[in-house]
Length: 113
Image 1 (cartoon, rainbow, N blue to C red):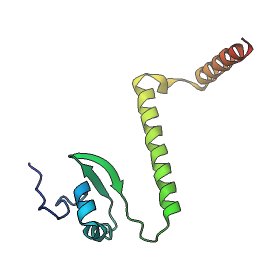
Image 2: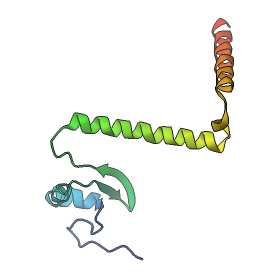
Image 3: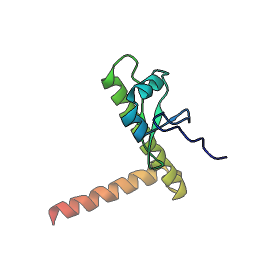
Image 4: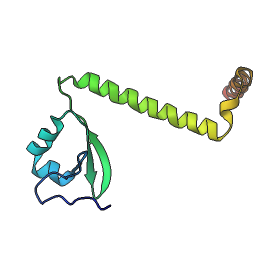
């Protein structure tokens, strides 16, 4: 199903998307949409580039901390998925300790050389 086209000078009609042009030309409308307390995807040249998230109470520090935590959770998920794909998710604690010991020994040798 094709996406609805936005009128020139108006925010994109998709409920969760906003174009760079709309942000530049009609920032007031964008802020009105953010007042709905839902994030918007900023799209440039048809490609999602960023998320615009409302901060209703103005607590930027807490919002930034939530963003950093969210990125950490995404990174953890990618690491876990990779471990499952490569079979490393089945390592026992003894296997893990052996790998740690081997890496530490290699690093100690490299430091001495």
